[in-house]
Image (cartoon, rainbow, N blue to C red):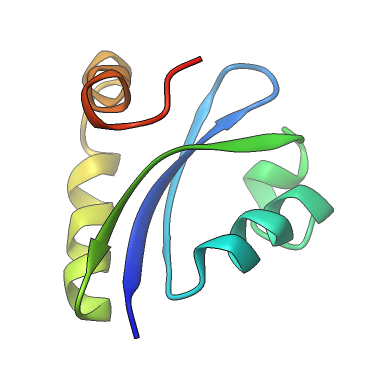
Length: 85
């Protein structure tokens, strides 16, 4: 089973980072208000970027790394390898 680290672009333009082992289900959960407290108040969200990992630990480690990036660094990551609008 694959594990993912992802970035969401929220309706207000903010970014949210998380990890999951079912990307489609998790994004859908964020959009129904069942995902995370933060995204519940910033819906709708769209998937902007993701990376795939073999283990949960790798995905969680990468999530922590991305959360320490500046907003500009996150946007650059999305622009380089994500889904830009």
